[in-house]
Image 1 (cartoon, one colour):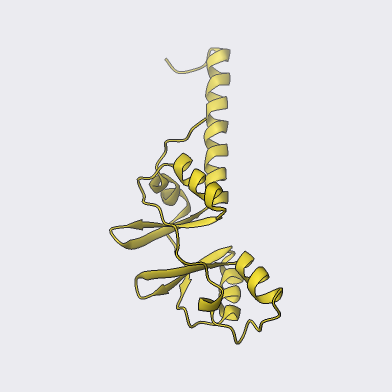
Image 2 (spheres, one colour; image 1 turned 135 degrees about the vertical axis):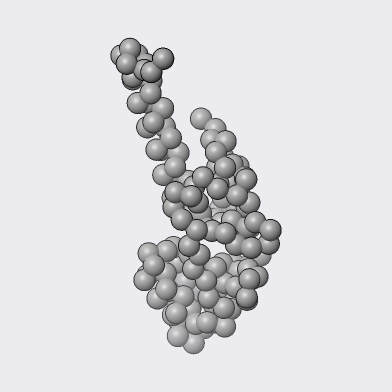
Length: 149
């Protein structure tokens, strides 16, 4: 089932909260913020401009495995850049395709050059599962003859 629902619907449900730090912030502060907010990634921003994105995966691969100090390493040294972005009108299926092809788990949603939210692959899977559960319930009601006419 191809979901043509726009990403704006997902943001309405999950919220528009964006967690970000400047490029010179330490990796430690990034990991601390992600832990505090139960986020798997956060944006690296200078003012309103996205300069990168940093994830738990970046931390594991670019700090821990390389023996770097998370307190001394700035996030600019481990962030992923450039960042793929989507718009609120992009549909879920297209965004999932982008995430799969680019092997990314989080994508900022940008409208008129401003970040209006971030969606994760988990957010999109949750949306699709809910959408499918609703369809199944409607089909059961239809088959049982209790579907509204």
